[in-house]
Image (cartoon, rainbow, N blue to C red; front, side, top):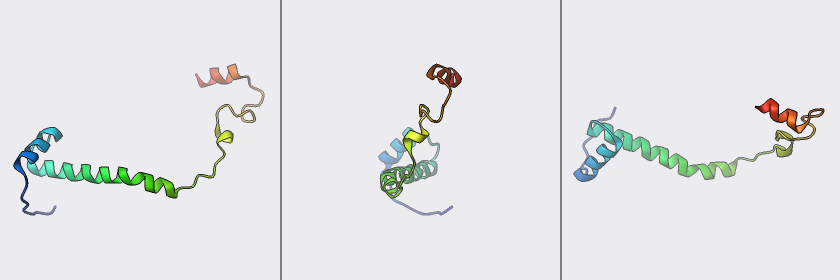
Length: 82
């Protein structure tokens, strides 16, 4: 843990404590930092996903692919899935 002194807006700090359900101001700040990190990671997901190239065959993976279920009817496949 790092100990530091900071100047904070008291009204914002109290509102954040109440909204986050934190018992202490330290818990409030740590929760707010975790939330800020989580939010930043979520915002960066589109950039990450643009870097991934999928090379599968969707029709080959589908449940209703004809070659995957040779010899079984649609009704039999549906019953098997429940």
